Image (tube, rainbow, N blue to C red):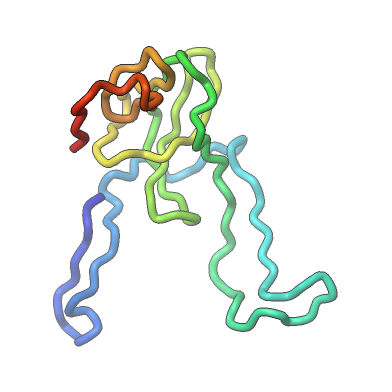
Length: 142
């Protein structure tokens, strides 16, 4: 993930750097993979303030990310890299060969159109998920 640095016009901007949006290819999320994210504003079920300094911010939706890569042995194509307001990592929208859509955490360097797979028979390539017993010895990730 590339970083955007700022010109030191003020003391605050001198060391400021933020993530750049160069790798983001999609602006709209897949609607069927969204959930509403309810905000409490620091209030409990009685409506009383129990945690201070919580509240405000922009409305967010939660993206359902498949952390466990539940479809094993099925190849998927990366449709796009998206921004996720709930985490600092980018997420990738993938489409399995049977037509199902899913989000995964996008490793650095994953591109649109790449093929990813999870399972014992997956090759040790970028974006693939395989168990440690199937990983070759002395594999170095870059």
